[in-house]
Picture 1 (cartoon, helix red, strand yellow):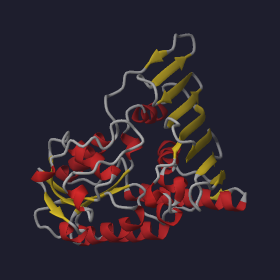
Picture 2: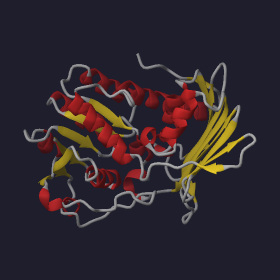
Picture 3: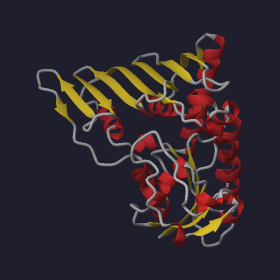
Picture 4: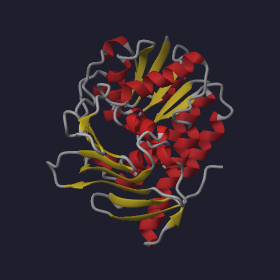
Length: 340
């Protein structure tokens, strides 16, 4: 049994608390948040996808800390799950790694690539294992896409379009671009990371975007350049008018098929193959949060480094977003730096 402490009880912290109840080999024994009402489970955060932060965790069974540092140094805690605001990720991840804990870091991995590198350097010397919670790599329908691309069963990928847009989440953190990084970092990073998960790091990006709710980029459309294809585009943002239903979609065109995912549908994934009727692909129930936590817990228990999401992957996703930001600001294609 891996004894877990969760720091930060906002939307993602609450979502992780719910997910751990479905991971047999994990037990949340400690929680930390500076908001006493959150620690007592009296406030409930709302996510942008139905099923997030449902509030099924029994707060009375866990040790409660106002400070994350105190949780990190609790000798009974084996693993620290960091769900704090993005600018705090590096500070607490480094402290937990230096304390010898296993560490899960919610996305984005860090606020900047410099902070990401600091985490990498400390993690390389730590006895604890670490992973970034890039949940789309575990999401039903998205894991199917990864397998379809890698197997080549539908032929070569010709083009891909990802779209992830919704209304602004509100609140002081998401309204402060310097803290959140704007939608390009906080939201769009899901698709930017999945692009590199499928096809590797692109040579360069051409990005177009604008600001609306913060002084950072709140809406972006990016073309990812690969010398031998495919044509890859991703759109992301939180600029839609209030009441707009959150959209999370992809359309992938293979040589021999087209796959379309739309989270708004009861059966979100449809496959169109030449000469056949369209079919609904049966997916595993739920979202990506439980399988990602179960995967990391298994890595800890099996004493193996996570490979499905490496820390290098997570750091590379920050460099990819920074290239997109530069492209928007310069109105020119920008090369993507590589993690050294």
